[in-house]
Amino acid sequence: MKQFYILILVLVTFSLQAQVCTFDQSEVDSNAIISPGPFDQVENPDGGIDKPACINEEYEFKFVLFVPESVELFGVEVMIDSIRLVDGGIQGLPDGLDEETNTTNDVFYPGEADCMVITGTPTENNNIGSYELSLTVDAWIRGFGMQSFELPDPAITGPGSYTLDLRAEGQCSVNNTEELTIENQVSILSNPVTTDLNVQVEAEAYSQVSLQLISMFGQNYLDQMYQVYPGNNEISIDCRNLKQGLYFLRYKDSNKEKTIRFYVVKP
Image (cartoon, rainbow, N blue to C red; front, side, top):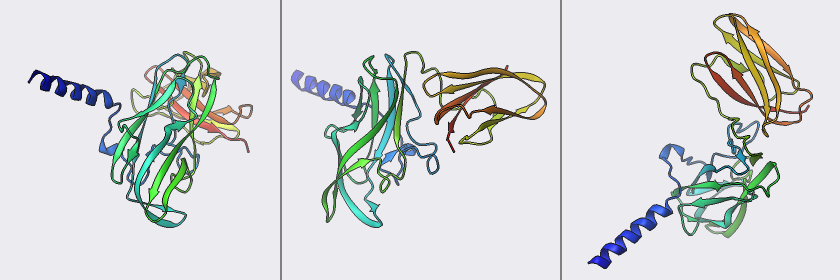
């Protein structure tokens, strides 16, 4: 009897250890194999990896995987029997980061969903910059046998890419999601930006606001105070000297702080 309880304890402990991430049904996209989908400036501007990583700092980003019963491949609907992650999953990660799933053999069947996390601590051996990531899978397609795909693939996931931004230690305090303490009162009028970044501030009274312009690597290109008046205020910031890429506008006043991401595109 004692051995039986020990066996149960070992099984329970193993089960708890194997659960590397959790998700709920609202995170499952039944129309996509992986979500969030790849970032595309036109078709999926909210996709991709929107959380930067920093040297010597713990990191975690979650994907949710779902295997549909069929997919449209080059205009033809094909049935899927199973999908397996190849070579451990995600390729192109910085040293110190790896991916983990709850599925020990990395095989998924139609109708099944699971989560996969990029986790770890980037080491000092890495170069600061952008890392293009991909996910290689073997798909067993009914009538066609095993087919290998590298995701993202425009025919399967739609256009776009997965880019992980790796910054220097201490530079991950720049948040690339919107943070508000009260209702929105600031917005960007045009995104992406080719010449000028036009910022609109809806003010309730005379006050001063702070605008910072920060690159995805944490470089500060602007830190300036502006006087605003009751009603609509439009502030124009010259971005013609900035390189093409992802940037963050950080807005501050006496009541709130908000960070908005935008893109500079060269004409």
